[in-house]
Length: 316
Image (cartoon, rainbow, N blue to C red; front, side, top):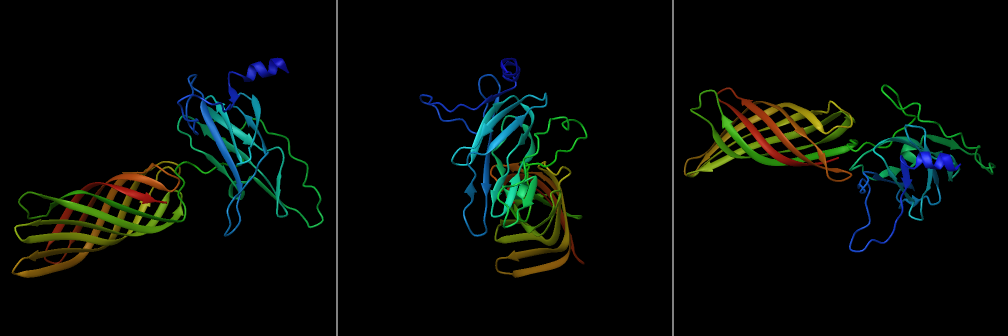
């Protein structure tokens, strides 16, 4: 046993919480002086219209790619942690959690590196759910803890925690920036304020659908010029767990002018939007999203095109 423990020590070590003068307690994803990462997880059983119930005393076996393993256990808040060398680890519960006649276990494969956030486990990402009959006194015996032989190119874990860039359900984006207006017969370009709004739903982690607007405006010497679109919008992420995306929209475009003392006029036609951006996750459901869009409007008598560069907030 002693030789086994000494071989594990360079790879993983249990998190030790100790008072440190003039310093805050480490957070998930922090590095220590030896380059290890603090991996933290929380286990919560949720109920409709109720607060989550933390699962305390739940044992996890943490298995490294080398096959070395340690055991950690959740505290009263349902949280457990370990200092780990960067790499991919399997977190396995050898014993089930019984809750309202269901038995839950977890077997998750997690890449651990600097900045890895809190790993959240609940019924939604349990790897095994067994319905127990009313007369069942004990759940089935726990399965043996698997090795890490599935880790590697082309391998697939039995289950996975939610990725850092999880996208699901309702989403919307609001952004502002600077835009440059041009047209087919214009003599040069003109800068102005620009922005946009998109509201929609998630078709898959890589494809979002919504309704969007874009707008550009400039006022000078009593005259205000505005152009914009109202369109059906798609946002495509090449990677299901990455933040980079391509966007496109097709709908109605408008060009309007308002001159003080002379009145206003506008025309509508076809509007087209193409662009790209990057989500930088700053919260569980919030990203900072720098973007570049190009949109164009063509009416029966006029045309306009705008290149816009800006920063938005995306709520997932």
